Length: 139
Image 1 (cartoon, rainbow, N blue to C red):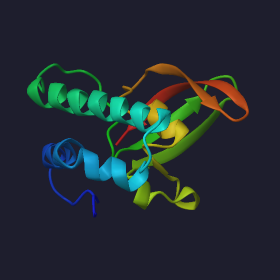
Image 2: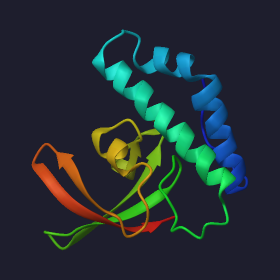
Image 3: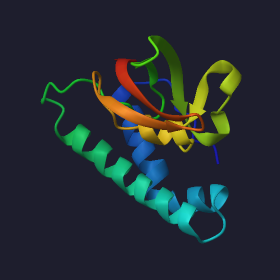
Image 4: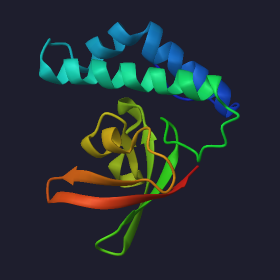
């Protein structure tokens, strides 16, 4: 399964994601969560929410809302309490490469950043504890 986002318009990339995560959802889940269980069920819920989020964004492109985080976006976050910034690219699991700051949308941090908007402040759970972050940039 190759889910890489190809060059093209952002709208085309979102439509491609709808196909991959909508029509191929079971194959995607089987590839990454072959066993039934809590993690697979939570991922099914995340995928359903994300697909609905994309559909809403595509249907309502004239809202003027700040950009949101989708798979394929590069994001810069500000760790509010630590006055540090970090930049990541949110990718499919097979494209994850932490050394290149490419994190899977299924990773603990990736899941929490997905669907956030610029200037949102969220609590991100990390192994070191919860951290407040602000979404600074989305490309």
